[in-house]
Length: 360
Image (cartoon, rainbow, N blue to C red; front, side, top):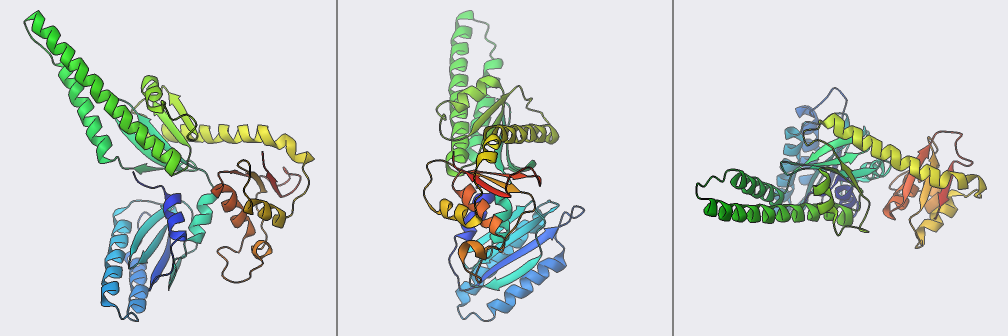
């Protein structure tokens, strides 16, 4: 299964130093769908200057191979209104498109710098979305309400093909002898049932992967009976929402509407649960909230932030150099999200204080 963008960028943030590491942010405006050859040429030019200082020819060759792979990803994709994050070292090649316009930058050093994308992803909700039926499977990664298609694994493709074949065999039985007709019908029904069970089991494995390994909510749409079979045994493993009655031929816009409805409902539930308690909560300094988040908490925290509120990150860390972000809100939001909590940005004037943490 393919890792989601949040996980891939998180892994980049955990990478240690390398002999040479290139990080490039290449934003695409709404009207743009490809990065120009000139901009990609600048990336290659800066990389070559750094490679000229390396004495290990094997590392140089590995870096160039990885860079070619990443630049090829950029050229083949068709995205707009977002930013390509390119991360390359002699042992790593990663190109991640994130739907935020981040400042353009090309930097080469000993360590990767994925933090702008890391913090931007933490400020929105990521959801795994699936539309399933006995005829088709469609997987998406939703960052906010924007959908990105995810490829089907070979296991899912094979199980779907076997199910189609078993159903065709069942529907095409035509034997003159009634006795043989009943016998072949029973065999075909049995084969179809086995293919459907295998198909359901593999879809359940995919959903479980995103619930448990990727730690994101899963929004599953399609036929009610199939949804119930897939969800069996997944209780308590994460946030799984089933939406039945969604046609398998639904357009991307219709699926986006379902995602937007889920996000709006989720936010409404959180506001109804926690907003009534905020007027009775004491004011908390950012440093107090940061200290709380460094401890093991009994449950997932909920952070309310006034839109536009910011303060220097050094007020939390006490450091002025080597900060991964200069905005202290970035650090708090990431800490809450990494602990499985929720972050809600509220319009100015809606909160008693611009920053409030609740631990249910």
